[in-house]
Length: 238
Length: 238
Image (cartoon, rainbow over all chains, first blue to last red; front, side, top):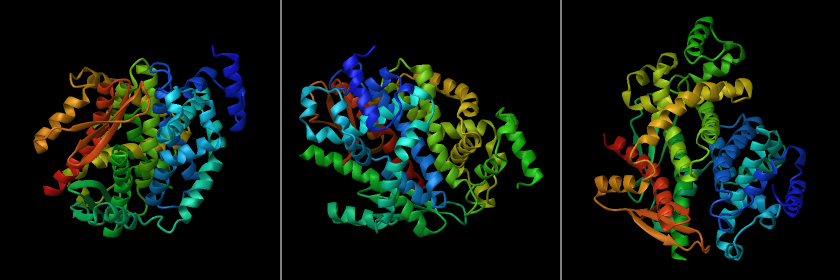
């Protein structure tokens, strides 16, 4: 059982995201908003793990309904954007998730971890909503307008769909080098396979009906992986 | 409309996986079993993309029901095994998926691509089953016994849960070096964060209530990423 004051708080959040409270499992929603800095045992770690899959399911269903005519490459690029910490944190922040998140004192004062904290609690809340009803409808209704708004912005960017250009910018800015593309044998006449190498590592393998399409796919896979690695090392230096 | 001979073939497959045919969208199931080497336009690329999310949802739901008492670290390790190409291809191969897969002549003779071909068509079939009913029940009923059997094997391995040991073996075998673990500031007293570096790249960031737990998580994230990169470069050399 959760305290009445906490329930009032959580009711506020449900109001903000316009989800009817009748169908909610309050204990799960409460746990989704407990940061591991508050308790190492009873926190939102597990729900974040579960919520990641809920989110991906919601996103691909949204993309099927709204962008069913797009290429798989475009859809994969949109998905990787829509499930990124940055995007999730921005949505959560718009609802003031931090106000509802129970956390340790030090965590509150730390702007560095705020992005992952928001993104993780967002995913955990998705898990709580899904597990309350075993149904995606509540979540779809809440998230589709957000996913639509963000997709429109992403699709309007001139660099969208040109992962090769974006990857080249990234490697030049960081190491003054160009990514290396190597065609590998796909053993199928109509299909090309390409690896992309940066600093002696293969960061992505793409396939497509042309060398160019395969390169774009390889670059699209390499981009988030390299960016993640760079962010980690930047954090370490700071 | 699909040809009666193709429908007979697909009916055979449904029999093998014991899924009732009444609820099936035949066109989707047909498309799930068309390899891109046969047609660059009408193939299972998109369904594979969608099926990846279906699979993850099925796997985390299974893990919740069967291994709800395990740590999130254990669950993440199990998940990464259960969604791996190797495991999916083995399940698909057990049902003789290749017999039902329409593909180009050259693709048939290529043992190198057989793993990804099987894994991809398996994911595509999951998408076709899910989209036929908008429900996970058919798939759960089919896959849970497989997931159970594989989980039991994985959990029984002595290396399970010791990603650090597995990662060390990998880097020593390939480059005669040890992974480097760097503690980074988590700014939260009870939470430790650790990066793992191999060959000047950070391959994973882990967090936990002890340095050791954080290192294990970082290693668990680095393992599949490094393995994937190594497999790609090995393929390129061969």
